[in-house]
Amino acid sequence: MKKFCNRNKNNPNLIGYFWTDLGVWPLENSKNTNWVEFMRALPSDAPGQLKYQEFLSTWNGGSGKERDEAFLRLIAREYFRILGTANRKYDPNHLIFGDRFAFPTVDPIVIEELIPYVDAIAIQPQFRATFPKKTYDDIHKMSGGKPIIICDFAVRFEEEGKKIRGWKPEESPEIAGQRYAEYIKQALETNYIIGAFWCNPINSSPDFGNNGIKQGLFDTGLQERPGLNAEIKKLNEYIQGYTPKSNR
Image 1: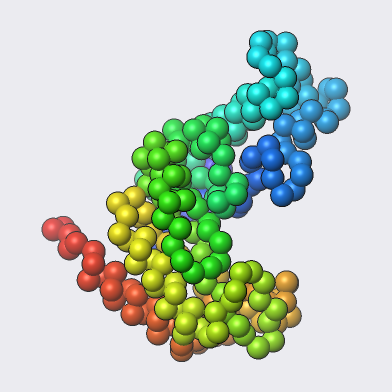
Image 2: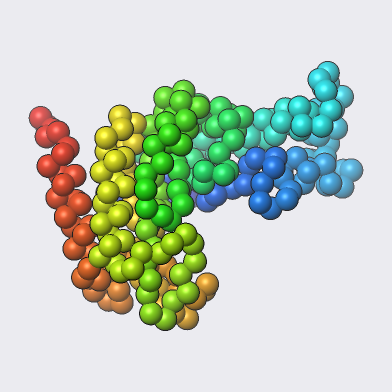
């Protein structure tokens, strides 16, 4: 962390730091394993296993999920303490967003342990239109009122030469840009979402991993992708007019 902060803290374009991208925290998840099971399966002399045995020696609660949630809390507490303390020490002048969470990876226990070390909660929503306000409201409440930043978000669209995965890709980049603008405008109506950015600024070629599904705002050589780019420009103009002017 020290090396990373020293390399970036004087960058005039730096806003803040993210840590792990979409770590799978909940005990029940799509990977069918979790950090508690990982620690429990370590060799008897591994530090994680020794910590787990120490935890068991003092645990007075029930077995199963209750026990595993308690140990998951300790894992999260130590992980966030180490990263958060170091990040703040080596660059006290920038924001810290911490781990990125998809909606299914948000866990109340983990969020509670993260809160002391971050300035906002980083959420990477599904790549689809329609703003899920209740979900964001619930996360905001769960975090004790922390701001939220929407990260790596995009609305996917049909594109020749690419196998676009996900939920109902839009028919064209123009329509995707319009749906994205609608989403962000609704985010602006909340009093806790502080920003958002499009996933992947540069368009990927079809031979890129996963069939080039990254649909950027710019193409090779930073050429604008006219339909999509035009809609984002209009959104930015709307945001500028919406944002209160500073007295500074």
